[in-house]
Length: 189
Image 1 (cartoon, rainbow, N blue to C red):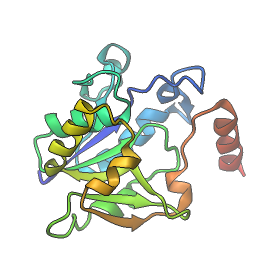
Image 2 (cartoon, one colour):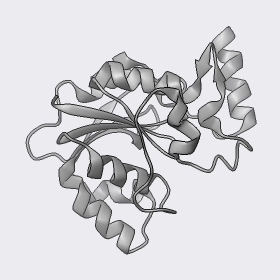
Image 3 (cartoon, one colour):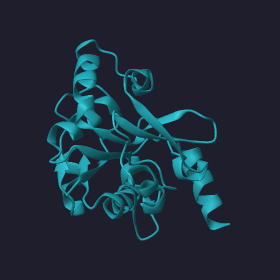
Image 4 (cartoon, one colour):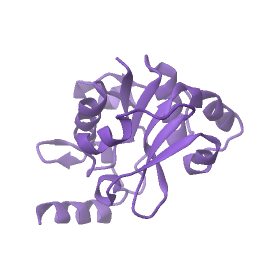
């Protein structure tokens, strides 16, 4: 296996008011939808989050190794436990994501000398929660955790990153009940 896949499901979902990973998504949940796409694209999937909450979903679950660091802690955990050098990491709140979109990030893997391949949407901003990371990123992430610099978007400039465009719908995330309702309405049209 040349790469591993991870879904970050450890957030507090404070703006949603309930666990967004467990939102009903068709006949499954949002986290299971994203996990299926990650597994299809990467060949495996592990959830990064609370094993008590997500352990019954049928996927391996790993608790954050460092708490209260936000998504940075989840990415750090994924790279720390991964059996591979290259690792696809996707947030659980991207209902528009698909295996084909994710394959666009990981096939082929990053060019020589790159630490990550990151999706970029129509706005031109990199999306660090839909990216492929090499283990070479661990020292940068470790230093950021020790320095309490938890914003992944700020760390992007420290990584040798290749940006790859994905369509905006694939990268849309849902953080509030309003965004979730809007997504569901769009989906039924």
